[in-house]
Image (cartoon, rainbow, N blue to C red; front, top):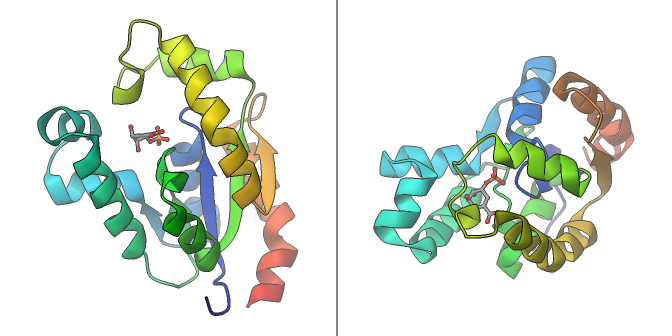
Length: 177
Ligand code: S3P
């Protein structure tokens, strides 16, 4: 694939703060923000949970692939859903768009954050904690291998994470442009 873009692309597990940090980054930089979950929801006129229950995960994943493919190659903040890297082509795509930032958090903190919201269809199981652990076991290596930079959000505010991302990606983005 040709030269990489200069977007800041957020990847990582559910509850690591991608959406909120993406909003903080867009506010700080004035860059446009593309959030694949929101793009999918807008195209269906349904929530993610409704798309999963009405159409199934496969339909959601296809729409998510399409949303990512529709993100323009321009300076932007790109927020991805936690399962985006399950499709190998998306690994290439996120890296093509720009510098890839992996948000992580301590497992207990993730679980606490995820408990506060019941919007994640994949965690509507008898044992959400075990489900999250299993999903992380499969996905963390993908996030780690794809990222240029990793930021631990466990004890930082969204604004602090945004600042950390800007300072740690500045050089990479500068060299890419
Ligand atoms: C998913 C994560 C969600 C959303 C969907 C599936 C996943 O996004 O795309 O519920 O497979 O991890 P967030 O990571 O923003 O919660």
